[in-house]
Each structure stands twice: as C-alpha cells, then as structure tokens.
Image (cartoon, rainbow, N blue to C red; front, side):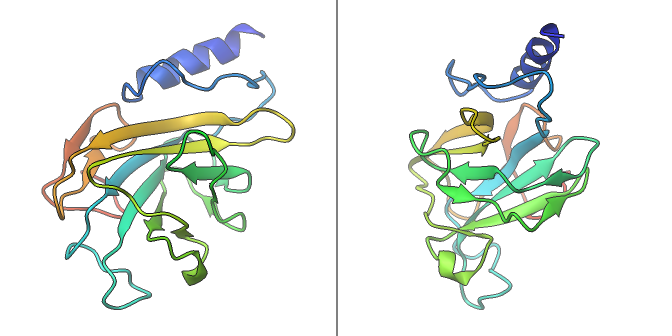
Length: 181
C-alpha cells in the first residue's frame, strides 16, 4: 500500500514540465484522493486576444486549469498561486467542480472583487511562476502542478499539447476554456 503513492508521484512528475527538484510530496498518504489537475494554458501579456466576457474592454492575463482525470473534482481545498512561499494565495471557487476533461479559466487581474475566478495578482510576462496546490485537512500543502516561465510575447498564449501533457508550446490561437488541439 505504501508503494502506491510513489508510483503515482513518479507518473505525475514524468508528465509535468521540469520546474526543479522541489516537488511537494510530503503529506501524501495512500488514502488521499489527489486530483489530476494541471495548468494547461496561460497568457501573461493579453492585450487584444481574449476579452473578459463579464467586463467589456478588459483584456487581462489568465490561466487555464485542466482536469485530466476520470473523476469529477470538487474545487474546495485547491489553490492557485504565483508565489511558492504562499501556496494558498488564491482559493479556487469552492462551490464549483470540474468534470473529467473540463477546463476552468482564472483571470490573473488583481481584481478579486470582480468574482470568484479573479485572482488577487497579475502575471509578469518577463518572469513568473504558477502552481496548483491541494490543502487537505492538517496536512502540508501538496503541489499538484507548476510552471515557471520567462519572456512571454504579447498576445501569445502558452499551452500544453496535448491537454495536460508534458510539452508546452506557443499556440497559434489561444484556446481559453477549450482544448489546445
């Protein structure tokens, strides 16, 4: 039974981009249900590509999360951050869930007053970090996925192809909330 988390973690790490050797695995126990969520696409310099549908005229940066698992994932206890030292910086909307193969778009606009999908920070196109964490009860936060990036071109998104895969590519056409192709 102890071997199962090790097999799971090796499989997860193999499918994720190289973001260093500090993957958070402490606190994982065999009985924990660890969701198969990944960062799937982001746009760190959105000027004209995708307008916030609720706020006409706003072209804010965004990140897309993908559920690559076979189970529906309840978002309570899940966090998105741009700071490794603060894994619980932004709580994903706890009243929502993600179906298998589903996508969730989070606006990184530093305008949390605009609603539960608006993070309290912006992305830095020159260099930044994004991560998804699970906080399960009294356990240490568990990093599910992360990416570091530098020098992002204006209006060009980066996405995983295929969805949830290991490889990141510049996308010819941004696909927020949909498959990267």
